[in-house]
Image 1: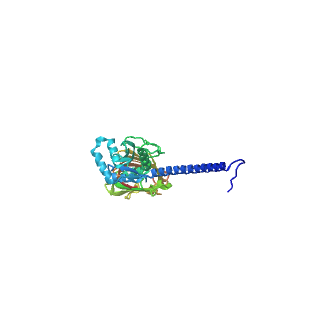
Image 2: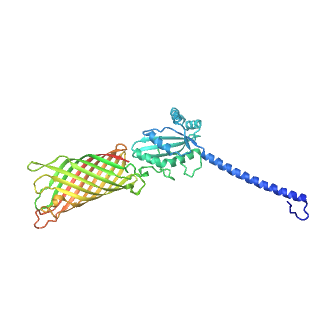
Image 3: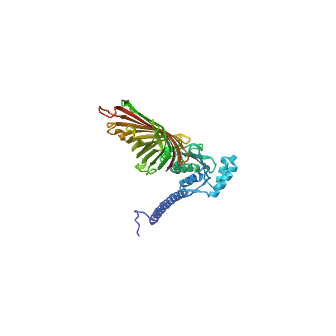
Length: 448
């Protein structure tokens, strides 16, 4: 192939110019290949570094239900973490127990021997709450690089909090122990007993029942039963007719109540909606008349309806709307026994607060919209009788364990009657007050 050359350019000069161009092209190509190889090697080395598993020593947890909680922590570790075998972890714990005076140095020597980048310790404590205290130590010097704690009134609540927060905090603390740069906020060393929030970006707020929210109270279902004592006072007002009142000082009874939240624990909007019911009945009650004769007497009440609950910190609120009946019947032929059968609509609100030490306080307020008063409103008695009612109760509960609770509840139901008497009515009475007192000892069982 003929080469173009400038006028006066010799063939030798032309050859030299061609060789120079060829050499420059070769240098450019080699440089490009070297650059590409360098980048590829860097990428591969970084990928290999990331893919390399981190050997971590997880010491056996201490305390009640420790193995169950440790299993949750194990399942929360990232895929790039390799736990040392259980046998080695147990032997390491035994060795540390015999050398407590060495402190950080003992952990560092053990980690170096086992080629572990970090050591994880955990302790479960049960006092007024269930608590897990977790710490991570750096493998090369044994110092604590991060600590976190989760708690709950019940072990299931604590476990739920751990499951929610452990993946984030374990990864953060292991990054700190290994000295790996992380986009997560650094977890500063702190006392193992310090409760720490499990939300990203926070390092000091306590993890309480609101973390899940109030899972100890937000049960799937609960049933309670126990003995009850009933009392009643019925008094006529503006009693021109001279009708006698009625008093029942105390009567044995039985109470049963329950709640059901079918979708509790889900993430659906219906998780806070449920149902509730209550039933009570007197047991073998007799009323002794003025002539010393006794009359069979029964007191019964029930209500059933829907519920909506909200949790806030250590408080749980329930809003309800029920239909119910409340009956009093005395088997006597007298034309004026204070027999009633209230039917009502019952809107209510209740609040429950943790008081610590397994104790909880509760209060309920309800309005009783009376639909009917039963026999008291008969044509031959008070045909224009209208009534309104209200109910209040206060309770104290003690948590026995994660499923059982003992509750004492005192309550008052108040009904106010207006007879709207007119000339010609059988009885000239202005109104009546009907008050029912109760005290109940309940044993509750609930499931989440």
